[in-house]
View 1: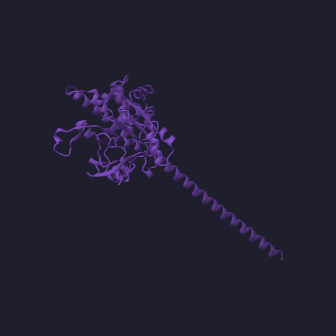
View 2: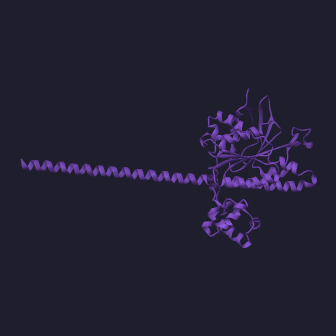
View 3: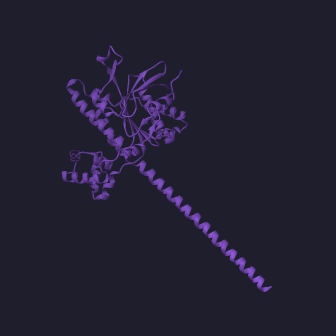
Length: 370
């Protein structure tokens, strides 16, 4: 009897030990799974941060042997990222007060190491471009025309006569750019440079209500500046770069890009200087679009085209070939019936020449009305 009891006791102890071992294994496996899941989440967050910040802040140069005083001089001259230094000419760097040619060469050498300019395969470039998002225009018809919306990382020009919806489209984009990417947004702030006095915050609140987003938040996420001359318009880009290097932006609007150049430089005698200054302004916009991954949208005025009076093209955009070559996507807006307007793709590296109708209403850009 005692022997039988001992055997049962021994068996219960063995079963208890087996259960304990099994429980330990289960807990261990659960902990391993939790650790793996945590690592995957951390990797996903790091990848998201890398996609969001596709540039190096200018202060990163200090970690590579550049004096803080020299970095501050670069900041004061409008260089807010390492990419800006890498893409600048040696002459431009030497123009910075306190930066000698020797220092400029060292700066460029360090920047080249951090931001190498090398050949990549088309497959790699396709993968990089796949991370770019498009901003919804507010109209399904226009989004379909533009293959998803206004492209980030490039310049989009809107030109047309008055009351064709240029400014209203810019206001709508200021709201849609804040939406989640799944909803056609860029999950970033908007910047608006106004040269004609047409920016209206109350339009943003009406559009925000339509998209069911907080109106106060929308207004806080749009920064605005008024330019009164072409020199001030160019200088505002320095402030813009500084802000974009510190926060996430997905849109920059310049409405209009050419109005002040048109009035500051008058007559054929100043035409060459006007085009030179305009070209420098557009070059800076192109660099910012690439550097910060933002969509740059600029509006343009039109003038009568004497050569097109007998044809359909009675109006042509001002700025000539300078602005035509700088714009990646060129869109013409014209009036339609009633509140309807028509957008036509004039030039684009990826969209065929075509057109679509849309409407302008109290809540911004929408699909055409019957």
